[in-house]
Length: 184
Image (cartoon, rainbow, N blue to C red; front, side):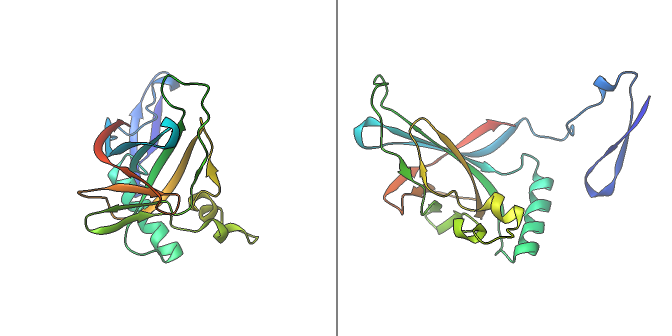
């Protein structure tokens, strides 16, 4: 059988396979790893706050295209979309301890050059109905990070550089970030 697969830029790729299971689902140009940032901080009582930060999309052309579309649609400043995952765990070796939840207000990434990333929209930007679904999807996470939970969030801005650190809980918690590679 012959398959036409959509590609970026409105192009189509011709693919021949006898079995539909042989049709590739991912673009062969997708990277095996994504360059990002990771960090961990000790909190009161031995709890640990872990952070993973990476571009929102693994493929650079997709990242640029989606970022340009969001920038044009919402009038955002120059930048790109990033994803961050925050996880809160109890002290190692003490599964009975229950750390306090961490307030997600003030979530941002800074470096030696200043502010780099922040949520593109405040949580209250989606409180009025009808809310734009993209605005709701990329709004700052409301509330608190509960013990044992992982919270994903979208951030907007430039790529972090030297001295990158994540700020959370209105800047009262700071997590130093180091370059890392993640599986795509």
